[in-house]
Length: 286
Length: 102
Image 1 (cartoon, chains in turn cyan, orange):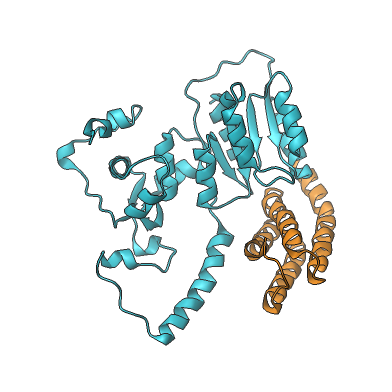
Image 2: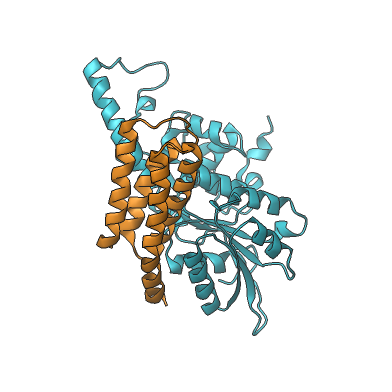
């Protein structure tokens, strides 16, 4: 095993937290972690300097999944990396161990440890638990996973006087597209709108290329994640930053967007100030 | 600007509700439920996202509840159980009523 690769300064070259290996914070496979207020602020503040892997872990630390489950779900890193990164994130105050109050799940099996199964439920308890699960699951989905993640650009951007940054808005809901267009125009951007596959292709081919794309996911004849993937495979368009602006409010969709190369993920309904902050952050204007 | 667009969006809502109603009636009539559910779900999903942005929070919440109920039905062929039909029907009604509360 290459332990050198797990050193924080190798694994996360931009991370400024130092860690003494002798004072390692214990992280066990059955531990459950959840974002702290500081971690939540990174997810909802519209501007974050966290590394992609830190963001991925912050999204996966949902107060329900154990470290072992997170490792199984994480797409881009190993179990050792998850453990190392969690230690760093605990030190930075981004995550904490989940208390019972943090949980929105009825599954406490991790609490009792591996190899010690919880006693069987009686028929009456099973019926009651079933009703609770039925009532709870839609509520979880209904309230959704609302985030406003936007990565800060690596370099601040200099902007020539009177030049307007071109932003492509991919949105099929016309009133919302119009609203976004007006809003961005007032903020000094040059907005363009595409509502369907044909318009997306036309706008992405049109020169000069957009300097930022706001991308909805559910479109009448296209899938936003598919558009993202194609952009990131394209030699010219892959450098164009993308912010997903979508009503897809579950952790899996957020992960899919961020892992697909999106620079931000903002869920609808959104706050205007947060959206503008996110756009400026991704473009290096703040 | 927001107030103006908010009013414009509110004016357009009855059209969206009529579109939902029409799709729902076709589902109830047994016409290609999988395709129609997917289309109905898309319309409802759009309302859930946009209504809240225009300040119609109650509409957004009601649409999200309907979207959650519709999602598992998308892609399911064959007649819909009466229990599901009643549930969707009542959530649709609640969504229409929510426009008066926002």
